Image (cartoon, rainbow, N blue to C red; front, top):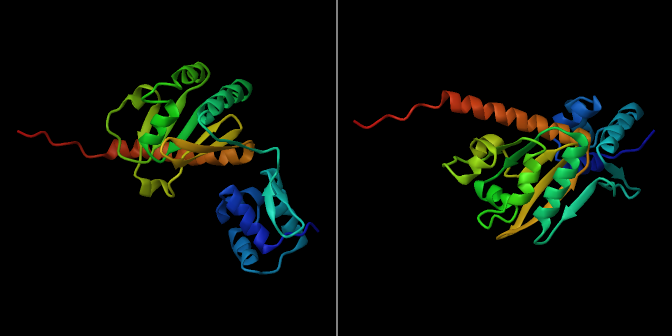
Length: 226
């Protein structure tokens, strides 16, 4: 039996940003059983094997001291003034290798402006390179006014309350990246090379993308003042 503790299950889910239902889909173990285990309930060897396999296939490494961590080969962190340049270079390389489009959920227009290098326009050359390789779609978590972003991406918007916790992520190839703002114009970008988790994030994006279209379709028309 591959031992796994309740604390490790909770910690591994937290690293992956998985809910119990996400773990259910990945492992085949019911969410009810997962809740029981995380509350200190007993676990069979078959269940432990399935849970460990699901986590390990998603890049989690189990430690002897009852802890967990990312495997060293699945996570890269970009910091500093050139973090977006490094991200664009990795996007271009990954899309050339794996194909597919690029999708993004952004917590604000401001973050997407900085991602694009606006207003200084310092990332537009790299953005043009990416455009030649793939379409870029983005759901922005706010009500959007017309802006230059509409000329750079295919955009839709939803209220933050609909999307959930504030976050900005980008999915490309078999990777996904989290953009974390640490100050004005300062970011840390964490890139994960995890195909299964990237697929899960892409499914989340597809759900929001379709919901944003439905929202636009049923939005009431503005009355024209007479």
